[in-house]
Length: 194
Image 1 (cartoon, helix red, strand yellow):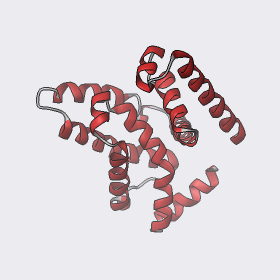
Image 2 (cartoon, helix red, strand yellow):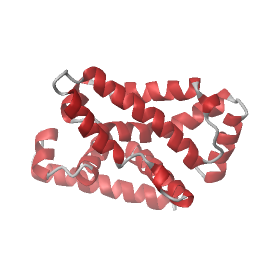
Image 3 (cartoon, one colour):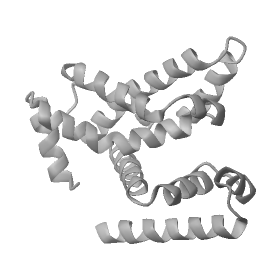
C-alpha cells in the first residue's frame, strides 16, 4: 500500500470511519501474525492458534481506537504493537503451567524485545522499521505458506536445515529447494513493488 493510501486510511480512521479502521487493521494482520509466531515457542504454538491472538489484538484496537492519539504510521504501529504485546503475554500466562510461567515469560519477553520498543529509535528510523516489518510480513504471507514458513524459520528464527527437515518431514534437498523457491518469490515480489 502506498504511503498516501495508508495516510488516507489513517486520516479517515481518525475521523471515525469504521470501515477505514478495519482496512487499516487488516493491512497489519500479516505483521501481527509474524510477530506472534516469533514470540511463541514451539510447544505453545501447538496449543495456541496465532490467528486468535491477532484477532484479539484487532478487536482490542477497534474497541479502543479513540485512545490512539497519533497521526503517523509509525505511531499507529507502535500503539498496535503495545496492544499485541499485552495479548501475547496474557496468552503465555494463561497457557504456561505454574512451573513454566516464569521461564515462558522470560523467553517471550526476550523475543518480543527485538520486535517492539520502537521508542528508542529516531522518528525517521521508526517509520522505516515499521514500514519494512509490515511489508516483509505482507510479502511472506503472499507466497505459498510452506515457502514463507521455511524462509521465516531459516532466515529469521535461525533454524538449522536439520531442524527444518524434521519440522517439514522432508529431505534436506527438499527443504533447501523450498527455501530457495521462497527466497526467489520474495525477491520477485519485493522487486516488483520497487
